[in-house]
View 1: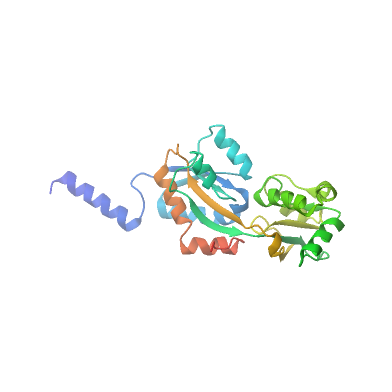
View 2 (view 1 turned 90 degrees about the horizontal axis):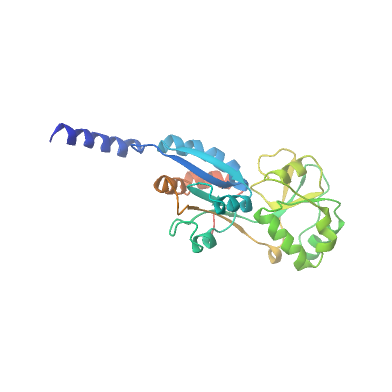
Length: 251
């Protein structure tokens, strides 16, 4: 074995033992704000284990899709809805779709505030009508669903003027500060904000589970490192972190 071959063998063995790539990559991630808290815990772990560096842009899903459509570079997209449609449109790589978990729509109130009734469809409807102010995620996945639900319940005209929303994280702040009676939202964007009490999910007849998924950009500069990140986010340890932050494993 010549010296050149020996050196290559040593390098390969080191990679297998440490699981650190020979050349670290900078991975650009577009991330739904609802997944930010869990991701912030997991990202440093991935960087230590892989040697890669993550550069993350966090926003509401529609804003991230607009950035993609405008040609802004990224390697991985993680959204609070199913990326299958974006894959079908040829924007994200086939066979890279990765399911990270799901979250149902529920009710949260400022800690110590009166608790609205929402155990039945009629109770939920009346609580919406009786509220003075309601928080939703707006352009976020649950916010868009709530908007459609108001139409379905026939109370959009009465309730829509009461809704307060804004950029990613706004609904949690509105509840925490007591600026709304309650929020109708998924749990993940509320976790970690003080002075919030999660009451539970809306009735099954009205429920819509928000699936969190990720995929690799078809124009990714670092597709393999991007796939490595998505694989890391599905490990048992990562699933446990997502669960702690309000995201249930998908059935």
